[in-house]
Amino acid sequence: MSARGGWLAVVGTGPGDPAWMTPETAAILAEATDLVGYKPYLDRVASAGQTYHASDNREEMDRAGLALDLAAEGRRVAVVSGGDPGVFAMAAAVWEALEIAPHARWGSVTVTVAPGVSAMQAVAARAGAPLGNDFCAISLSDNLKPWPVILKRLRLAAEADFAMAFYNPISRARPWQLGEALALLREWRAAETPVVIGTAVGRADEEVTLTTLAEADPTMADMRSLVIVGASTTRLLRRPNGQAIVYTPRFYREGGE
Amino acid sequence: MSARGGWLAVVGTGPGDPAWMTPETAAILAEATDLVGYKPYLDRVASAGQTYHASDNREEMDRAGLALDLAAEGRRVAVVSGGDPGVFAMAAAVWEALEIAPHARWGSVTVTVAPGVSAMQAVAARAGAPLGNDFCAISLSDNLKPWPVILKRLRLAAEADFAMAFYNPISRARPWQLGEALALLREWRAAETPVVIGTAVGRADEEVTLTTLAEADPTMADMRSLVIVGASTTRLLRRPNGQAIVYTPRFYREGGE
Image (cartoon, rainbow over all chains, first blue to last red; front, side):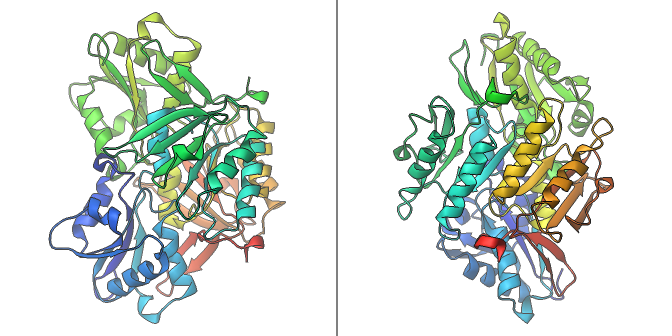
């Protein structure tokens, strides 16, 4: 606790279904006097008597600074992300603010992070277990990272034969990145490699598409999607009861046999 | 639901602290008639009136088969993993059993997976946000995967400049793997690269060590540990209030500057 009783906790709601939010996060939200975050996330955790500080999704550093200011004033502040705040979300932004543009008034603020269920885990659970063996998670957004760095990572991840989860696969401002990523992977992985596209998972309009690397098309995804591309060992299993799932076995034999 | 009302749900308790178990998982556990899993995980979720099927941690396929048999008999079965059942845990084992050694009696069993908080997320939250940018998760166990495959993945992940989370870093049966992995990474990453070793996170004897690639030693870890090695951009931040954290910024500049 800081001298005046304020604190800042970075939390994640999970990917949409309230049943995926941890009790720890629920308790922090209940104790907070102020909630700071992107408006759709705040709308998920609305409760009476709290002050809301909603913002656009592209102003992470400003949001972190506002949250630190409020905590320094003695407020109990929850910074609210969507899935896990430590995975492509607000936790890093708060530490960046503290390191890159620190204010003396922030020095004594207690800052903690609470883990949560991330989108890739919810999509993986719906699909079967595509992340059941070694995998990587890559943001396809080139807002903060040069696109050549992303391409290099994709190529090396393909060579390493990781299953891959793509965050921020597509948006109006970034319409071509997912198509280019899939095109690169087609040079490395078989046409029938399973691909999972999970959109708005955990919400009423949830959609989970099981497809293949050959058939996957960027139009199947939107800004609410998370995309998983299988490793060479990832399999599509059709069960006698009609259920189709995608999973990556725990064992590994060279060549994916 | 299967014809006789049985089902199988693969769930994870989260990494130790009950406050990290999702409400969805708690509800499934409450509805289950039978719990199947490694004994320490079952002990975490003990409740009255349920049948326990505890087993050794190395018999995943037998455990999956037992769970499917029980569900086929009309029981409501929860297969219980530690963190997220989809990340190096029981979900893949259940699908393997269904694909590799299927029994006709399993054909109509409803099988679902519920996501959970995985160990790497809890350790990352305690440490700061080391997985705040692109990262990979690798099991260092060579029980089911040849060691040369693991070395190749480590080398390519290093070249890709991923932060890395290592599951199953060390055990009595696998004493040298972590040391060899760290030795390989020292050829690729700077000596001062942050390393986080989280042991028994979320439990009474939790220990989180922040160290560097030069100083990291396998004796700092045990079979309850998860190890995170930073990317070239991962930073150690010491705050004026004495807090030390490790985080990976969202932005990326070539060379890690």
